[in-house]
Each structure stands twice: as C-alpha cells, then as structure tokens.
Picture (tube, rainbow, N blue to C red):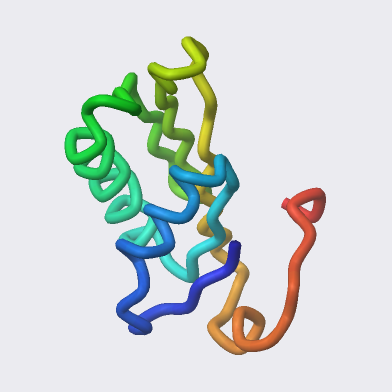
Length: 100
C-alpha cells in the first residue's frame, strides 16, 4: 500500500494494513512513527482481535509486531520510509518492496 504526505489518509492506511496484513510505504520518517502509534491505537480499539506486541523504529523503516488473537499467531507490518523517496515518486507509481 502506498500513501503520500499530507493526504489525511494515515489512519485509514494503518487500519487497512492491520486488517489485510500488508506493508506500508510512507514519504517521511515522522509519518512512519505516526503509523506505529496508530497501529498501537487500532490494536486497542480491536482489543478482541488484535494485540500490539511491539515495534522497532529505525530511520528508514519501522517493524510492528501484532498478535492476531483469532488465529493465535503473530504477524509483522513493515513501514518503509526511504530517505531518497520524494513525493512525486509516490504520486501515481507502484513500487515493488524488493527495491528497498
């Protein structure tokens, strides 16, 4: 899933990533940190289904571990915030995760 800066879609992006177990690409480091906080909040909101386990926050990516209580398994959501990526690359282009 790809999202741009200033679009106001961060909460919905995190919600989609949580429900569909997919990774996120954001345009800036601060948005990556926001996504970590939002995913933690969403886990509290869905307390019957998901449990926030922890996060590793780095300068170019964040890794959030979440426990799916219904399946009894942990899964990881990666949040990529590459330093070299500029906003115009996020507008209209699909990027493969193997490039990071």
